[in-house]
Length: 114
Image (tube, rainbow, N blue to C red; front, side, top):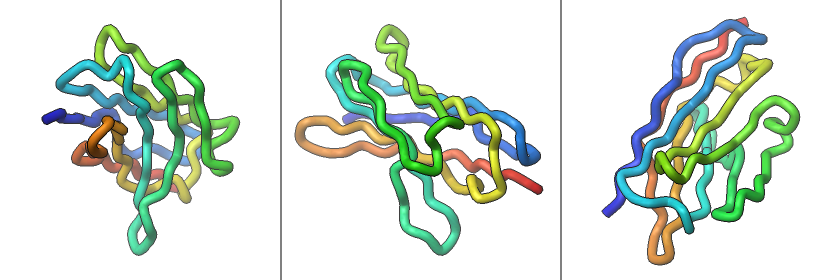
């Protein structure tokens, strides 16, 4: 069993920045990780992913503004979010793609005001 704990959410004005962290209770060295978000009334969507080898991919809405990174020594994945927009408002979830199942964190709220 793996636990993922997100932190770093909060309320910011448009144009501001936040850095989300996802701390895993076990090693994520060989695990693909991702950040998802879910806005009220909408489906959960992928924001950014990072493979065990460090390759990254981003949703079109995140490209150029968000950066995903990982620190395997700390079992932690980050999401640096810059130039935030009101439409980025959502609960952000960390995801770990283990061989037998996905694991999800509890989510952290990000609210961007105009």
